[in-house]
Length: 332
Image (tube, rainbow, N blue to C red):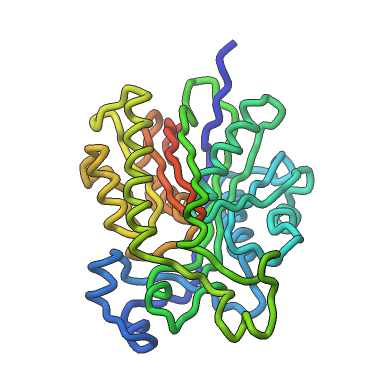
């Protein structure tokens, strides 16, 4: 009997209609298009403007897009993993609500939070459930409404983030395709450099924390950049070495879309040419948990069965890692 691997068999995505361009940001904070583009590679980002809608809205839309495209019965889904850093609310799991809303009534569900590495960690988790042999269809969703935690008077962070959602379906594979290897890492030194200070158990919400803007993302950009470049590049290079992959063997690099310079540094360390690096940061900015599935969705038609893909991400905490996956299908 062939070994069971976990392969991605379907993709879905959703981004809000409202476009927040660099030109609009120029009127909001002291910045300009050239400065943003040069340092980040971002031209615009999507923002969820619908009143009363949160991350679940993005996740449901992405999941429904996948279900419609793949023509699957949501009742066949065994598990829904919701990768997000911006759940609808504390305590009540966003993934549970999403599963019910999409009709995955036979699935169990939970949230997975590892900042910008949430989807990457979710790939490992989904794969383990499939390889256990107990589950056949695992839906992994990455979605974040980053606009809900961004201070739009802070030019250091408001230029970076956007809202969006993406979803992939993992199923068993006996052809040797799917997830091949992973290197996942974390280091608590990062806790002070990228965080939301208030709203948790250490510093609960109060009138003072709201006035002090402690419920918005704080980022020490230079420190995070330094760690991200070394972290993502290191694990991407190591996973190639461990699997005897040369730069010619790698068909695609699917890297977290936080900063174009970080992506370029990772590709350079791997020796992967620019044409193999999937990029959409200019359109969406950093959508946190949604960047990797949005890349897959945007470039799905270019991915061919058997392609060697390296995924890489870096997030607050710090969390980071790389996944080596063999693509399992050609888009019809």
